[in-house]
Image (cartoon, rainbow, N blue to C red; front, side, top):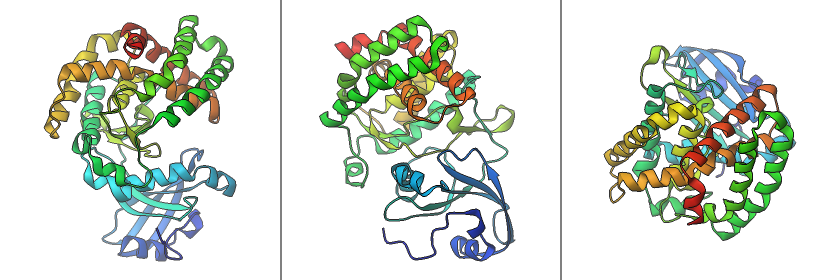
Length: 350
């Protein structure tokens, strides 16, 4: 993509009223920027605007301040820009409105101007969620998967592909060492039975990654509570954010990852069949046919390895914090219990 000079800004100082007027196609009189979040992947600012027919508040997402970090994260920057520029208008999942999106040819520099979803509140991965919030989330998730279910034109989009044997082999090579780093780092936070399940998942990873590739759709890749915004007061209408891991894969990976990491084992076991059914009904509402609820349940069981997989890599190679350690430990405890309860590994072996 050839991006005109000046169309990308990478610091809050450049988010001037003049630049924003051009980007938004209207007149911005004043703009006040306040930092949001910790800035591990990039930087984010809430902009308070005044002017002619402008939103009162928007969010500006910009790359990390360090140039070397930007280059390392170019792939995830491209993914999020791709979602807003190419994908969002073709699916039905609720995500923030994008007012402006531009990214450099090398992917290291970008600017996103997004709808500010306040007063919606971020989910809490440690605390988990209610069954009603889970139902809202899985129905919303079907809006990502259903509209372009097994759509071959997705394969024509630069940066999207279904994993092949080389990808699965590389995953398997990296997953084992990452798992040992994870277990050593979190130590007593990981129960002995979960350590055994984590290592069993490593043995199954390559075969699992290649399985059921005939069914694919757009997957969020990290559809969990910290990446969801819930309206206040228990109202419906969850919003999905952080699209840096968008890819093509077996759709139930998102479903299993969300349910398996968001609900305590007893709540999950009592309600997961109903939640999978809710998701399946929503899929059919988006035009998915020849995919029965029994097939959906089977894919859900098969896909539960997504939970430990993402948790292990996120902890082993991400920036560690006390909350992060507790969060990943909780996610692994919940998803490993689900793997055992659902006999996931026997499906992979079969």
